[in-house]
Each structure stands twice: as structure tokens, then as C-alpha cells.
Image (cartoon, rainbow, N blue to C red; front, side, top):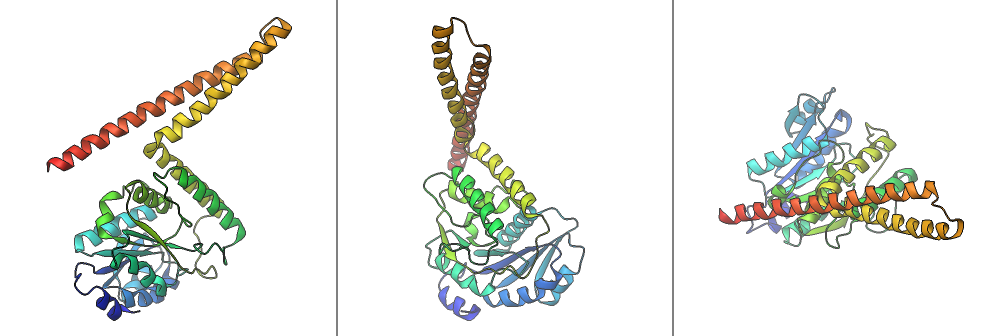
Length: 317
């Protein structure tokens, strides 16, 4: 399927023009061919050069892309924020995001577009693991992805589940743009956007896409990348689900403290005096646990109040 066939599918829905956005940093080797290949499926290809020190921007322009440039390397989150802002201002109906390293196959773009064009989804996530197979993904990388997937699911509202939370290949209805906070400027943005979409109860669908690891290269060590994403996800959970982030761990600590209290009472009945070590530990766990429980409740109440006021302001317009 090329742009002509896509035009036929969108006949009668003229607002669904397609922009393909490519965030990239030092990708002069891959960007030219990538722009040429994705242009078959786009009304416009926009490359966001995030402060590259090579000729990424020049090559992208020669290949026919519209190029936006950051003067310095700010991060993928900032790149996606600016790509969404450009798509919104330019009146596109759909924005497809594909990483600039050439690891994703542009010929999978119609798979991502189809649910949007049929109004079956608001966000389409290109999953490398929808079929349950790791494929060519290195084992150490897949292990880290599984850990991150599990943590991210803790922060999701409802029963949303995803097989690839770190995908850099997605399609969005432009109507979803206001729901993304773009709090992160770094690589954690992929996880953050999926959490934002799920918590806003947008319709999210996954489609199977291919990937290759014999091209491109990461600018960060995989362990460093994983820790950065994990830290960002935990921060998002703190903001979006304070009961889960604070109250639940607090209740666990309080429960452990209660268990220690029974142990201390039993020990006292046997030896006739209070065992100092377990008693101090019990008090510490009880104080910290109670603090976390109250913190989670207060933050949750504040979040609910802010959301309620925002809804009232939106309804009064």
C-alpha cells in the first residue's frame, strides 16, 4: 500500500492527512533512505534533528524532508513535543512517529494507519513482540524490556496491557495531542506517552511490526538506558498513581510492623523483657509506613481536586 491507496482509504475524510515525524540524532547514514521510503505513505515527512553534529539535517533535506533543528541535543522527549506541535499547527490528521536509526520497516506504516483510518483506535503501538516471540532482540535487551513493561503496567489505569512499551514506532490521531504531557525530555518519553494515553482512556491498539538490529546504534549503554527509563517511569507513577506509589508500600510496611509487634509480645512473655532490636525496627517501620500511607492519600486527594477543577473549567468554556 502506498500513498495513492491511502488516499483512497481516506476519501471522505480529508482531515486525515498523514505526517511522518522522525526524531533523530547523528543519523546521517540512515536518514536519507528512511525519508525516501516513508515518503510513500505520508503527505509530509518531517525530520527533527536534535542537535546532531554530523550532516543529518543536510541529508534529510536532500531526500525531500522538511527539517526542524534543535541547536543542542535536548532529548527525544523534546523532539516528540516539537513534532506534535508542528503537526497540530499544520493541520495534519495523523502523525506517525518512527525512530531515525533505520531499525523499523517503513513498509509497516500502513499497518499502523489502518486502525486510525477505520476509526478503531486513537493510538496505534507498533509492537515487536505481539506474536509472543523475541525475534532478533538480544536476550539482555529483551530481559530489560520485560522488566520495564511490568513496572509500567503498575502505573496504568484500567486493564490496559501492552507487549512493547518501549516501541519507537507509533501512529496517533492528532486529537490525542492534548493528552500528552511531555514531561520528560529524555528516552523515557515512549513509556510516558503510553501511560498518558492509557490513563486518559484513549483507544489503543497494537499491531505487529518488524525490527532489525544490524543497523543503527544506540547512543546510550543499554543498562544506563534501562535505568533512565525505569527512573522516569517511577516518577510518572508517583504523579499519576500516588496511592500505588506511596499508600500501598506504606500499608505493607505497617503490616510488617504489626507482625513484629506480635513477635515482640510473644518474646516478652517468654523472656520477661522487651527485645530492643526488633522493637526499634517495628517503630521505624510503623512510622515510615504511616507517613507513606498519609502521603499517598493526601497526594491522591490533591490530584483528584486538580482534575475536578480542570474538568469544571473545561466544561464552562
